[in-house]
Length: 194
Image (cartoon, rainbow, N blue to C red):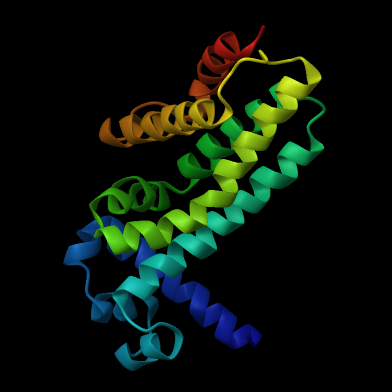
């Protein structure tokens, strides 16, 4: 994709985040996304098949970029405990820094039709595998209990972070999400350590 096309593609995704956050996925119209992006309605269809494709692309691109950051930070961490902390820090910091994206990922994912949720869920799989790998590394290194169920623990860790973000949004962001990292990670580590 040329730089100009990439810029327009990114602009449309930025506009979609704003429109989906303000109007909800069901209440959003492609024409409103086009207006917010400053492009003609027809231009949207040069990049996306329909509104569903915009939402799936939004998750794939934005969450894909976040997952890349998570993977890089986990690789750079010296221990499984440090990797888990870094994942939580990034999860909270990135969503606090991008509250509209947080709203779309927390609210719209749950309200979409099942086919869309499945497609969007594919984007999350590398993130979930990363958490599982960190847990497995922690077990192998002796930092985490050998009897933990890796898949269940991954679900609980992701679910806890997900709920913390949802609660932060529901409170109208009245407190710092990143300030919740220490309490969250301490909770996880108390359950995981031998």
